[in-house]
Image: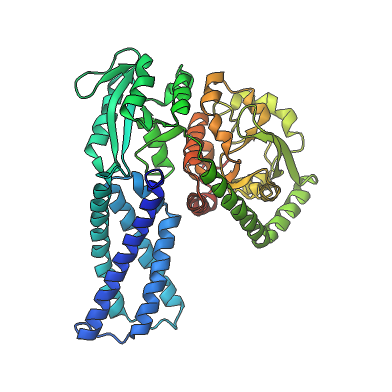
Length: 473
């Protein structure tokens, strides 16, 4: 049980080490205060309250930024970079709050000692965490016997990468090839026909594929084999890595195409997600009700009724359909005009996007830029058709226009295993600038990693994406 849930345990240990680093820095402040090395007028009680407040702020920022969730699959260098970002943000936010709250009795001498020592204690905590991780790996915790599937040098590159980062725990036990293109020497090379036996013999718990093209080029059987043995199937390539970087997801382990179900865990996660959706959508509706009213008035003045636009959508081809609600941002006969402008489509696959769509009204252009047109989907969330965070639902009619073969839809069908979302990795990564296949892969990454913490992280990143209108048109 501990081995199966080691990732969650590691997140808890990471938070604990951060709290210990903050506690050590606070202790140094108390030592300097009592010894008189640095003159300070701060009382022990005010320092204690300030330390508790900063601990909550620091851990909260780490959750919002995905530092803890992603630490399990990050190199030490990436962990240090993430820690530095969090450290700077926490200091700036703390100073801003102290300036705003005049009642805080902590002087600049105490703050100088605390913030300067905190950086070094955090670095020490990361190094200590690395040591603890290696210690636990000796007992088999956080260790993943793996196979790499590929027919070229990209498979060998995966091996070299994981070999240079032993802290991540990925132990390559061999290569699986179809055409024999992998150079032999470092590890055993097996043919596809031997896959079943190798998985059993080597106790494999995940398979890495060296190309994202696998989802449409005859590799569906890999999904079947992974499902049969309840192991993860992941795509890891330069393209997938670049895509995760765009989404600010620093996961060196790639994107999961198939993950064995964990029914008890999934049931608990879905319950928490649904409760969060209901409370969150109600709060947002109350806070943004003036924007709802202003948008309705703007639409009525420019083009009259209806105020809302309803469209059948689904998360996947042939999946569950529902009526998707948006503020109307186009002229009333937009669907009739669509056929005449299809040749101007600037996206691919099942996506239809035109940067200067002539059907969009003046009010519509504004509310699209700042995603105001998406707000009525809060009613979809309350109804249970959607979630605040999840894969982007697409118009049912657009799936018919997608050029991907049936094997593609079979390989990515896990996209429909969670409810479609108002926002997701696609939205915070550039929205309309992201290609169709890339959007699908980002959604698959979310499906495998979704949690309340990940949802909070994505919602946190959605704010600047909306404010600056990134990729919206």
